[in-house]
Length: 347
Image 1 (cartoon, rainbow, N blue to C red):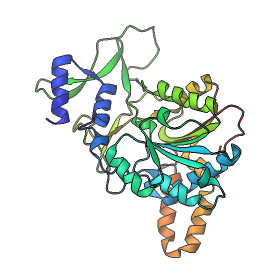
Image 2: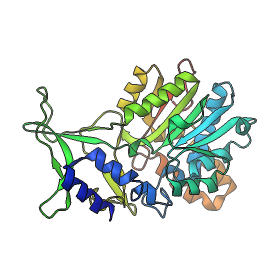
Image 3: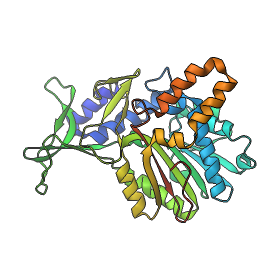
């Protein structure tokens, strides 16, 4: 029985699913979910291309950022944690870039937070010194530097649509042909609002617990969390749920478990939750501004001088990562830190 058939049977027996429940099943079903069945994600031959896969410079700069912040922490023994590390390319590049940082690799305990066995196998080939944890709270205690690149966009979301008679929750049900389809709940009682009809509000139910786990870690020991993802600095009132398959957008409901489902990250909500938890918040700023502040142009120039035949490719990579029409503006960067630390680099 396919995941689609299982979802149809579940809805027939129990009623419609929320968008969050649908996303959760499509991405994380232990047998047929997207992450359980993909031996590789995020590369040129996968359904989408992440920044580390687009250019080695991305992971190298993140690695050097971590080296700077390790120094700011006082160079302790620390957990170098990546959430959702994909094929392990970012951490592989970060480790290579910091090989000459005296004492850093000896002090680092590399922890990859990953539940997918096929992806763990990929990561082990690139980062053989790593250990794995299924959740961030399962990583060892102590000072930590945490990187989350395109991790928060995979948190399942609930969607609410404002209509003429109030708010409705978007649901996944069945049409007359017993096929999966989107629909709306009955109106939800709510205070009077001047919201325009058609406005969409998206809420990630798992975000608060994830920030709480980060809060506990950063209050128990000094550390920082660097979050890089596509999203908005403030909610824009639009439907951002999307599905990618073979580098093309497809109908999110078309093939459950066979496409990557994501939604834009609400950076204002992350900042609010972190600030309420007495963490320091820097950003969000655009990915382009962050990478330029870290010196991506200088890194590209050095690589061009060393490899003149790669000049045009490197220029394309810099543009892809930093230009507003590519990843430079849509992707945002925010840093959450333990109290009383100096400002992080890049912000």
